[in-house]
Image (cartoon, rainbow, N blue to C red):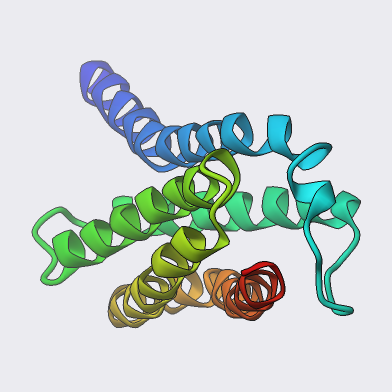
Length: 166
């Protein structure tokens, strides 16, 4: 009985790690591409009137990444043989990879156009992930709604920056 509880506890922590670590890695990769370009390149871009102040992005993304971790953890703790679980996890991790890649396209490569090419399919994958999560766990799906709203706003912002600077 004791060994079973220990094994269950280890599996629980593994699922936490599978939920949190990829999100943290995406966050760190995004920061690596972004921070060194904010003061110089990004500061010199023409931006639309609705561009938020730089300080708002950190708290917003911290909340969004926490919600992403929570949402995917809710899917990980479902039974492994549950139909659609693998598809839901696949779409989540694909959108997460595009999330990290956006910072490299936009900031590191100094290309609002490449950012735009990335962010539209990213948003579609977020919507697909929400749909797939909703079939399995509505709280997980609702936890990704702020991400979908923020990325929709980011599409408008990315597009406006591209248009003003091309």
